[in-house]
Length: 76
Image (cartoon, rainbow, N blue to C red; front, side, top):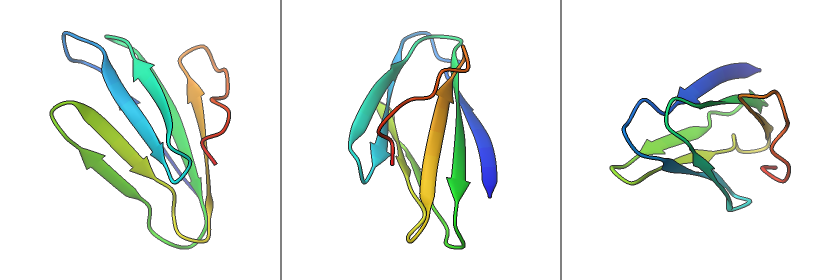
């Protein structure tokens, strides 16, 4: 299992897209999202100027929580 946080330290909101479920959230300025990967394979993080894509490990699972500790449902 691996856990990591993505924080938005930019001056504007940014989009995070969770794959393969295609769940999309808007991460407000100075907010973060905690992501947990489960499984033996490697997941994927793709950062662009406009958004971040977080891909679940093949054969594994993924969960995510917002800054308030609420789970983001449907990410996988």
